[in-house]
Image 1: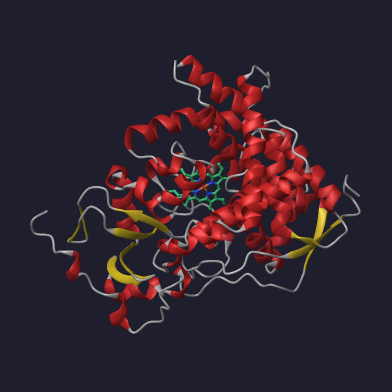
Image 2 (image 1 turned 60 degrees about the vertical axis):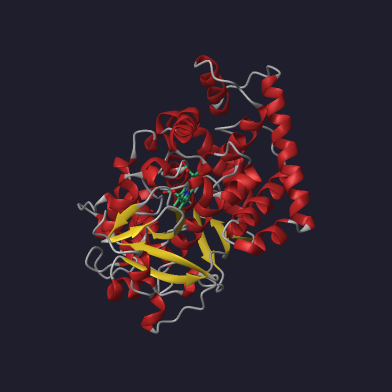
Length: 437
Ligand code: HEM
């Protein structure tokens, strides 16, 4: 550690003369900076000094030792809104205990058997939405949340409540990366009202469970697991956990679906082959795994690669660490560019091209796949996403012809790969041959 250089000696992004308005993440050209400065450099972002780390070496270093990060500090916005027991802002043993508590809700073994319920819910929402123009982002968020309310956490979830949950989640997540402007953004009256609706709904739900309401679902298994281990079952801890099961992450899943569908419709040859494969889509087949759907499998991997919905993670150094020959002291703010390898041509040839076939018969290292993060804080919802995506696309492409509105266009940001827009208009029309027609 003593040979390492201090952070003042790090190369500076500003010295490159690259664009960088220093307010929005996507205004930086981190790919060019990585090429010119290497895997670690400093930059001014929203008036503060940050260190950026990117590339395979950075992913390896960041994920090898998760305890070097201070999540309590970097994930403050989640604690402010979801409370002091919320998973992502916990560190060390407390975080590991929480992940054990959440396992009966999110492990693949806990959700795989729910494929028929999720499928039925998605199929029914698609039928109800057919033949009229839709905002696709809202539609997917609603359909996924409703599917959650019929599978992982069973509850009555009417359209008005679903609307409040979705507005809340979108506003909440947007605010988490806002810095000083966050307090005013969260004080907006419409958000305050939605937040009250969401927490009142979750509070009632938890109260009923604690009063003995018997429902067979993953939420109940999480509660029972705690009791079996002799751990306390606290209302305040269960409320944000119920939120995770019902709503969390659906905006990101919707973004992936939107981006993917837009790129699929622009790749007619691949789409035709995929549709032919999905003519045989059925939830019972999915229960046997993805082996029956090899083209769908690689399509989803390519969508994950090209449209990482959370491409950069803000971190804070929890204990002094050395990376790339520089010493980062405790408290250093770090932008971990965990999806930068997705856009390196030495790893993914022609990286900005939507090319699902690149995954056929080929494995890429885990370090080059950052869409869901890595290590102990790996996305909790990854298994759910990887079931919901094939179910939605399977139903959609088997039963419907999809027409997308002309605008807006989702573009891959040539600087970094962040989708700039993820809202689309679309109409689903039942295929003449389909059961939904
Ligand atoms: C395509 C959709 C999604 C994407 C791209 C995504 C991405 C991510 C990323 C990058 C992280 C950070 C991991 C890290 O710190 O290294 C994360 C964490 C997390 N995600 Fe997701 N996510 C998605 C969907 C979901 C869903 C559906 C849920 C539902 C529960 C969810 C819940 C979480 C939670 C709770 C964490 C924090 C985990 C922890 O700190 O232990 N995500 N996600």
